[in-house]
Length: 178
Image (cartoon, rainbow, N blue to C red; front, side, top):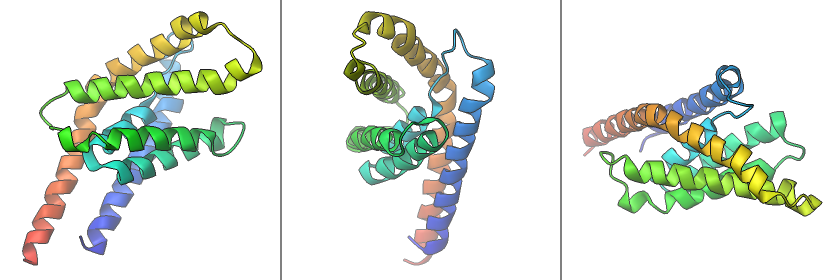
C-alpha cells in the first residue's frame, strides 16, 4: 500500500476517533439517561478491530483510550490499556467477519462494553472495598451496554461504509501498479 493511502486511512481514522469522542462528550451527554452515556469509542475500537485485524484494533484502542485518559482519567494509561485489549481481542475475530452480518458486531460490541464495565468496576471500586456489584451492574453497566447497543445499530453501518470505501480505494490504487 502506498504512503498516500496509508496517510488517507490514518487521517480518516483520526477524524473518526475525534468525532466519536466529541459526540460522546457533548451530544450524548445531553441525551443521557440517568447519567448513562453510550460508549462510542468502544463501538469504534471494536468495529475497526474485527474489520481490520488485531494490530489496527490495538492502535485505534490505544488512541481512543489515551483521549479518555487525558480528559477524564486519574492516571494516564489505564483506559489506553483497556481499550487496547478490547481492540486486540476484537481483532481476533477478523477471520470470521462478514460485512453483511450484523449479529457478530453486535455481540462483540456487547461483550466489549461488558468487559469494559466489569474491568472499571474491579479496578476502581472493588479494590477499594466497595463490594456492591449488583447495584453497579444494574445501574451502570447494564444501562450503558443497552444504550451503546442501540446507538451501535445506527453508528456501525456508517463505520462499515467508511471502512469499505477505504478498502475499495486501496484496492483500486493497488490494481494500477499490477
